[in-house]
Image 1: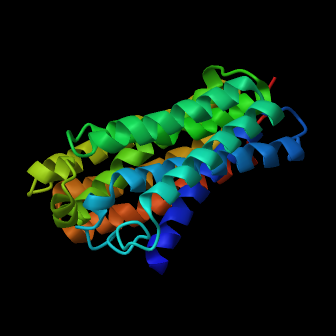
Image 2 (image 1 turned 180 degrees about the vertical axis):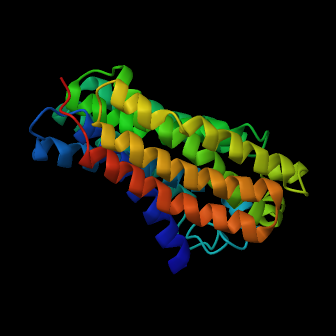
Length: 283
């Protein structure tokens, strides 16, 4: 039970952190701390709503998986009606907070992401493995939301962190899907690893998306988002993750997948820290 709670908290924390990073990147010379707090709070509420609706729709599936069967809904500690009512209330409140304290663009992105996560990505998980790519879009929107809250618009350089998040999620979740392949099959989820027992195809998808991330540091510099130091640091970080993905391709085993998964956990906070440390004020 504690592990499932912590997993949900970590997911919401990641969404809030990326939204907050987007807000800072979209700010000028001075970051509006109150606005940052309002944006993070609204994002957290919408993320909690989406996460809860996801679990409401997947009660039967979660009950079949070892890693999710002890969640409050499949274990019967909370009723689906109660959870759905809470999710609806907190989602509406979070969207309203963003509309009132940030702007309608940020609120619209939050509402759209909630719908995409709960009503597109969630049912798609039981239909086709393309759900992983749809889920990556969901994960890429929060930093764009944060930027929109700070700048009241989105621009070309606002896409750097969303792009990094999108491509990062593919090797991260491919490794997880490979490690938990049997559990996902038991739960009825259609992941790419479902029809890839050797792991070769899963590994190649991971490597390909790591390669897509290699030019992002240079683009961040060329588009005026960061100083040149970030370009150098991002290249080093992405090269390290790419080496892990290459190892997974050459030897698709649980050991290499786990190594790449752990590497991805270190990569994202280091990349966001570099972006914030070397950012240039948004003009």
